[in-house]
Image 1 (tube, rainbow, N blue to C red):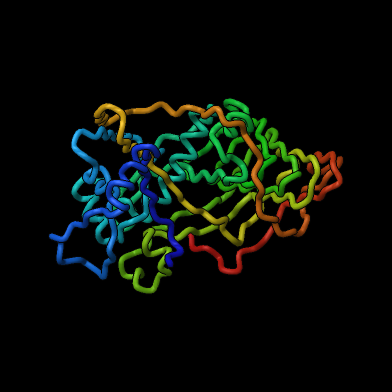
Image 2 (spheres, rainbow, N blue to C red; image 1 turned 90 degrees about the horizontal axis):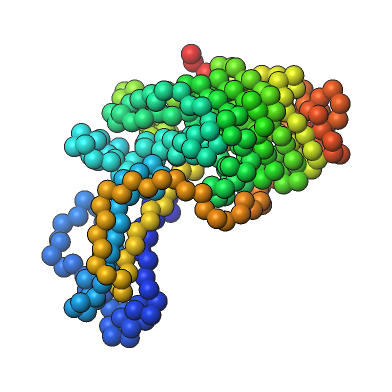
Length: 344
């Protein structure tokens, strides 16, 4: 078992043709018996391309390669050393470094393409010797946007502006942004199901978080999850708004004092890749396709979210004079001092 995210390959089969192939072969797929040396202990396995190789003469197979790796395929499958070799060869590294940074890129570009968010000029950063694009660190939790249409439905077009190095984390099914929202630092908004949170006019400016490269001399002592990414995150200051009870709330500049964050939200980069391999359509090979980001027809459906622990109320209250709440719930803006001061 590995606590780190991996990759999932996808193969699309036509069931009618697949059932015929199962009946013909009994489910037996030939193995590559020519390879006898491996970098580490291995296992008996079949590669997905072994299936079309086993199809009868004249079977139709197709595949599509999408150039936009940031939106479709950024697995975590190579160790830092192998990833660096791939980077020097000009190939995708498929590493823990790019796996995490690509999810920020994907989320930031989704905000830009679907909700008209204003992003800063693209920066570059180098971790574990790998230089890659470094977008604002945007996390759209599955509870907030399980499908792309939720981004359009919940965020008013043109209402979000992100500064270089900014952090924006949205975690809750009933959060919406009317704006204008400007983030220069770190903003975390969490809400349980039933807590309807509207982010109004809000300007966040604080010290934020820093993605600090780990020097080579310190990597041996670093935590594994930091070492394989090549950085650790220093959380200096955060505006964190948590609503842990049902109700209607509004967050605006006058209700949002800057606070320091102690813990980081979970970031789980997961990616999928559209790969088609069918046995019946005409032979079709499509390479280098640039696909527009399309909003699927699926409705934005609220998904259950884990309960958020109650936090001391310091600045946001339901009702008048605080968070603009209209319900009976309680909201909170947590204000915590770091136990360990981050090095600046």
